[in-house]
Length: 248
Length: 311
Image (cartoon, rainbow over all chains, first blue to last red; front, side):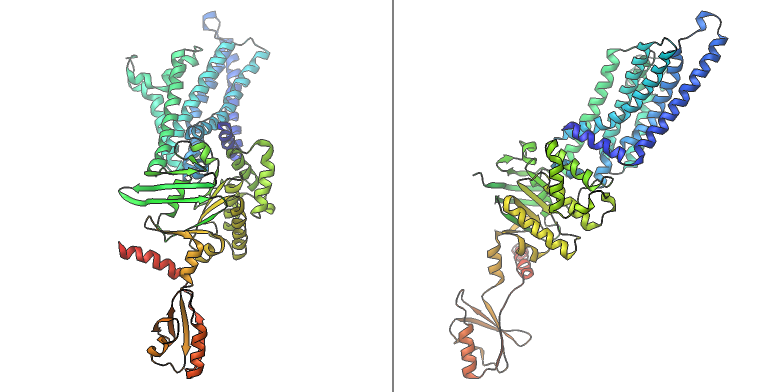
């Protein structure tokens, strides 16, 4: 049943040209960065004579592409997640889901999976794009996998947060703005408190937990952080929808 | 009893200290059509939301075919089809797409989806609209899509909140026929403002006012109330009322504003024949004699007004 809800969400994204346009535009941006990265790599490396100055092609290009991707997702996820529940609220379609033999948890997880699978297409495309380097170079597969996993977890966390804010309001635009502000705050919160690495606030920053993945390090603590982050906001969303039913 | 499809026990819903629905209880058996009447804001939609699990009752319980809505919501909801006040439609989908989604979410098995969609479309007269975007359909057709999604999984109980709003007279007739047809195998609950509609399609009527059930019974009782024991008689040379009271069966006489007389009689003993006879014999100049039908509207107003007066 969860998958049926997810399927409905995906269908809804692709029912209008919007889904395709977003995919195409973002892919274009990532592709451009990828190409530039390849060109720059040759320029920079031809100037680098000492072995210590040389870096691998995977991390050189990966850094710029994944850096861009995490930044672009900050803008695109709120725009995609805003509709999930607020649009249903606005056009009075929530009773349709509430009357179907579905639990609230199934509805929320279904919607979450729907959005994440759409975004996974992008993440996967980036991964495949970088993997094509393997045709003429020996790439660092571990680095690539850790980056793809990190980006995917980051995007999933963004989606969970977006889903929650979407459940709070009947205005998709309001949901998008709040989500964006919240995500932006969570990303840069560690910038405000530089120096003291051990503060609790730093630990809340999404970027703080994304950095290890970007360096090619998969730390279970970071994976757990992202999973807990997702779980928290999905639970909050279920609670919010339940409040609808209880308080009307 | 397995034939009971809907049981509502002491449903109460409190909104911010005010009781929107208070202590509503009723049962519905298989094959019955229940009409829900009431002025605006009486609590019809709130009751329906509680029946379908869209709203949790503050007190009381709902059972669908013996399954408790609060304890086993999934099993209970599988037996219900619901059309809310505003039809829940995903406007970016075509009719076919939307109905397939509805079928899938209501647990229709994949290989039966196509047949279910086809059947629902035929029943609601949507076959020619299959590939149209719901967004571009007229209000009446959107309403029909709303009804189609409510019956797509062949539910035991169909709950329709004002199903004929926005339809043209021919569509209304079709939908009424459909409701009657549904009433054969399923139970139907519908709310409406249109009183003749209730008379046409419903077996049972409930009148709800200010959250309270003021009338609950079979349509026949309401009809009886409507065809009260009264005659309207027009006499060009009316005698004094005492003369009329002497006619066998007449219990009371009152003069109406337009010069006609309203004659009340004991139930089942119509004095029509006796009156005509007397009128001819005594030369009262009878020119009109009719059973006096209070309109359903009057009955409705009476019932809801009584409640206000009592309170």
